[in-house]
Length: 216
Image 1 (cartoon, one colour):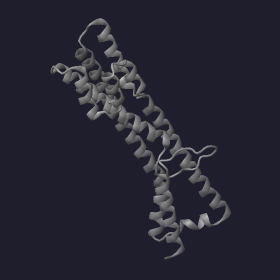
Image 2 (image 1 turned 180 degrees about the vertical axis):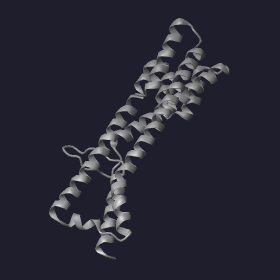
Image 3 (image 1 turned 30 degrees about the horizontal axis):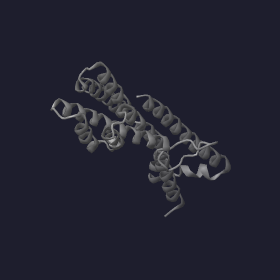
Image 4 (image 1 turned 180 degrees about the horizontal axis):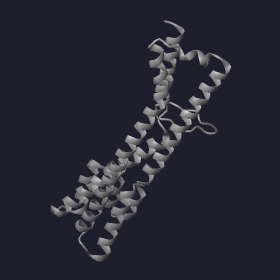
């Protein structure tokens, strides 16, 4: 293996690493291979919200089917484990809306509001929960659209990051030696600056996409 082929392999590896999901580390712009913690936490939060939305639909269906609220809560708890303490609160005769809010899941707080309004006004709980479930489904559909659009933008950004290095690799394998430029001090500094700028640009795009996704 010639030195040019080795450098091409190293450059290609750098392009792959730069295309990996990155985040800004405190005080710098270096990419890391760890999945960004805020994004992972957001994914977990959305999974809980999805389970809560499904549980709301189950609650409305079970109540419409003639089940009592306790049985409906138990059925909903099968798809949303976060409802476990709520079921216990209902069995003990405690405040169910307060128990729903204590779960920390935003959709369940809306279920708590519907439960509270239905209890005070005498309106059917199934109707109120069905309205909440419809709203949650519309919001989930909007989030899916936003996530799909952002995935396309992220993929394009990662592809553009790897294109310069890929071009140098192709030129090297065709017989030219563009890597000689990077063996000197000036060329090495230019290459390093390019890698840093690519990493910073990718991190910036990821930061913008994360901010949009968080508001969806």
